[in-house]
Image 1 (cartoon, rainbow, N blue to C red):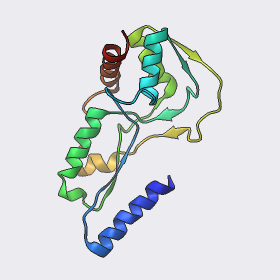
Image 2 (spheres, rainbow, N blue to C red; image 1 turned 135 degrees about the horizontal axis):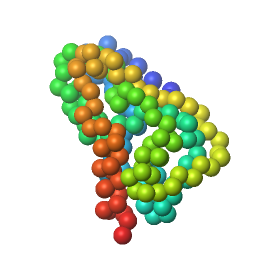
Image 3 (tube, rainbow, N blue to C red; image 1 turned 120 degrees about the horizontal axis):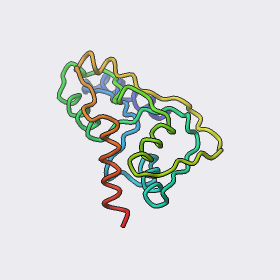
Image 4 (tube, rainbow, N blue to C red; image 1 turned 60 degrees about the vertical axis):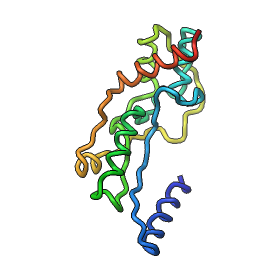
Length: 163
């Protein structure tokens, strides 16, 4: 976290001393086809496809997941907007879902069972991006629903990793 904040201050400082324009974008939990299998959602999908069950811990932890197509669309819109120069924005879905709920959604699509296991919880229990500024300044909203995003991602991993 300190590195991210330091980077933001470096951008602002470079702008102040050299006049270089910037827009800071804080990306939240992007997922989708082609993502490294060690990330959370691909891990859950591949485990469910291979074993017909998914072990999950920290099921009540809340995260803001955004689909790659929504992320790319948001980044392009931000890059094309002169009004956002010098702004700091969250690029996210704008709503949270628990790890348990996203696991249940995956289980429903692939007919797997969720197994809750006890492990220490992550340090940050809840992380949701506030996209109010992005909505008001750019009238931007995610286009692909979470349900459709999960379905597309499952289809990708099913086709490419499960034989």
